[in-house]
Image (cartoon, rainbow, N blue to C red; front, side, top):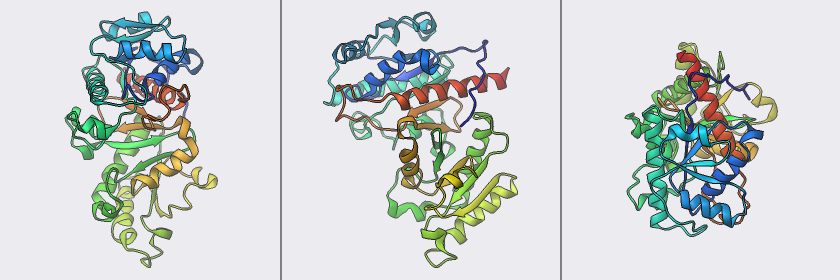
Length: 345
């Protein structure tokens, strides 16, 4: 959807790739992403923790990936072309399809360290492999998801960050995220929509190089409420938010009926869709771009992306994991990091 950002030779920090749950497909995705490094143009990255996990996974999956320990992230570039760099410290066993408290603890430790490395500036960005949130909750993870965790780790209010799903054909943003569908109407407000859409517009300019971002704002109800016949959220909340965005000279339109916005013709009219709830944003993205969909967190002082899929415990260790979304997440993180570096220069 955008051209690749020109790399800044003065800032070639590697990316930090968290391991994800080692019982899921995260290890295989890391290995296959390294194998595709040249063809896909992936910038150097290091996996954070799990050296033995990755070594065992490579052997089980018959992947010709040499795995090399590194002591600091600064060693990544020296190793990357000949081996997959793995920051040495915490480790575990490769138990595909059999998650357990130890695997969850390793996943959490990897996520925390990858985030720290990005926040302190040693990594150009962090790419997070899939986790099982319910399992992490048992070992002390008290956030609805990795997006909310990233905001907290950066010292921000959860509302200050935005989850955007991006693929080659579509970008979508849910205004409300991890909540019951029955709660969505009560959570929506003019201020929330304006805040999220403003973050999106700024990020599309700064991180994606779109000079005048076009935002299409969905309605909540069927037919965007049909003038109040099917609900008044469009009249009382969403339309006033759009007017406020337009007053800020943000190119926002709507409310658009959610069932018509994602047709091929309509997709050409906007750069990102601001959706009212989780599935309204994720269903079209996954239908169109599942194997290349990227979850990117906007509004953070660090770069964070993630493949837009889960741990897939059912196929872990079978060799069926598709690395496309992880490769896309690595490439997008590299592009955003390079664009930010150019802006700082």
